[in-house]
Image 1 (cartoon, rainbow, N blue to C red):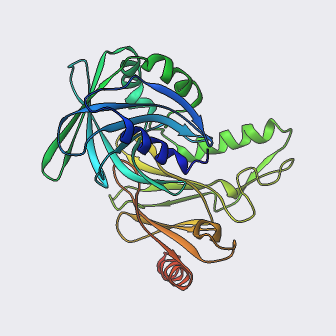
Image 2 (cartoon, rainbow, N blue to C red):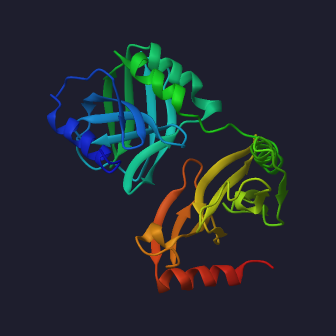
Length: 310
C-alpha cells in the first residue's frame, strides 16, 4: 500500500469500528511507514471515534498522530492521562506528511521517554483536547500496546533534546560519517548561518549539510536539486531542532516565519520550476502556511533574498 493509503486505512477503521468499543493495539508496516495504532471511545464531544498512531516514516523521528471521524483543529494542546494519573500536555500541530495533513507531535527524547514507558505498561489512556469551546475526551485501552509499540520504539529515533553547540555537533557527526568512508571533510562558509529565525530575540542556527564535502563520497547530504537543512532554535536549556528539510535553501521571513525554497518536484513539476513553502515557527512543530509555485514563488523568494542583511 502506498503511503497515501495510510490515512484511508485509518478512515476505514474509524468507519467500521463499533461505537463504545475501544480497540486493542495493532502494529503495521505500510508504504515506508511503521506504526502502532488504536482507536478510543468518546467520553465527551462530537467528533466520534478517535485513533492514535505512534510511528515514523523511514529515516524520520517518531511521531504521535491523531485521526477522527470528523475534522480536527489545525493545532491543539492534547493531554495524555494514563491510569488516572496526572495529565501530560503536548502541543500538536497539523503537519504535511507526504501529501497528507495530520494533527501530530514529534516525540522528544528529553520529554517523552517516561510517556512511552507508561503507554506500554499502563491499563487505560485518556486523551483530551479543546475543540470549538468544548472538551473532547476519549478513553483507549492499552491492551496489547507493549507488543505493538516495541518494534516502533526500536526502529524510530526520538527527536534529540537540547544541545549546547549545534554547529560543533553537526561537524563531528559529518566528519565521522566521512571518516567511516576513509575520507576527509571540508566545510564551506555557508555551512552554519546565525539569525533570529523565530523572532523571539535569540540567535538561532541554520545548518546546511550541503556545505560539507567528503573526499571519498559525493553528495552525502544532497541530491541533484536540494540538500539537507536543519534549523536549531535557541532556548533557555540550549538549542533544539525546529525544522529539518531537504530543500534548496531556508530563508528568514520577518517575524516567526521561514520560507523553504524547494525543488520543483515538491510542486509536481520539473526540478528547476520555482516552488516554495512558507512555514511559521512555533514552540511545538512548524506550522504549514501555504505553498507558492511559478512566478509567485520566484517573486517571493527574490523579495526575501533582497531584504536579507549583507
